[in-house]
Image (cartoon, rainbow, N blue to C red; front, side):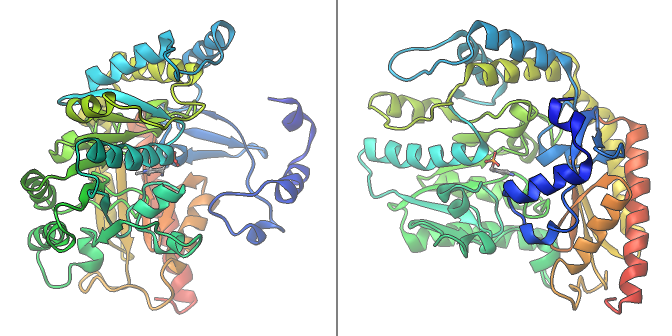
Length: 461
Ligand code: PMP
């Protein structure tokens, strides 16, 4: 406990918070009166708030606390590194031990010839790096006209100018004159919402072929890269049909464009492999990483780059970098996090134990009258709320009205589960036990029941 939480009651903390803290992705005035919930401690998969409530965190913070909260080893490593070398940069021909060790480890863990790491402080910054790095790469190869990035509607690649532009979130584009030029969005492989009468397989193929159409329309000589999350996270945990990724890979192989896998959520065990690219069977030229890299204990992200791209870039000066690229404390924490994931076989725990158990229970939620599809890969899942399972119809009320109510019932029941429109999503810590899965499902079911009762009473069903 620090001095402030020791001394101030919740209401005073909340008053200071709304007075001085601008919250990300929030309508601040909505909680001027009620205040935000003050989280004071966490252990394993459980958060504690300033009133002592114990909350099951089925989102692992923001999809990041893969090894769970409260691991002393990471705190010890951070303290040791701060004493030894709290900061130094890696610009201008200097380096340090934590960044060397982490880079070598990531090269060992990453598939194929992804052997080179450019560091950032976050996933957004990693994608900003990718945009500049890839354009610089093509220019250095004598193809400066290859500047266009193809991405997908409803993708999430971050909140910076490049990240939000690469992302396909309309409400984000509406603020700040986005996207920036030379970003093109194709449709997403969201069969539930957009598949119409097609089978998921037909639809997956059709949506992948939109990439080929876009390349032909824009010109192969102008397209630099295609970027996508192996499984869309913030867009609502959209699991693409099986036909989607093989077709995307075929198209990327056929035309001279780079494939960038945004592994910011899918990386570091979330899908039951080290990387989501392995789960969906693709071979990217670059992977964006962050979140699970340090399990959220320190802000760090980066781009893992293949040999060929790194070699071309290495022959020139790349005028890019952040003060905190390869921050020694963040690197040391990330390295310790990777050691824990590996030595405790956390990915094996996901793949062989907890994810299959969660999958069975999660998919059974589709029997609830309010739930249409229930999808899950590893430890990231979603359920689509619907008034009609057969037609996959949306609610008559504005998108997100029902999802928000469900989220509030989750919160009221000490469960953090997010809503994206009318999809409810989870991404719990990978260390979750079977008992904790039971608690998650019990609380989620109660929240669904309460939502169902409420929307019937309010004539929204
Ligand atoms: N890419 C993906 C796929 C993400 O999910 C996120 C964050 N949710 C980002 C990039 C941006 O990461 P950050 O918030 O660390 O900038």
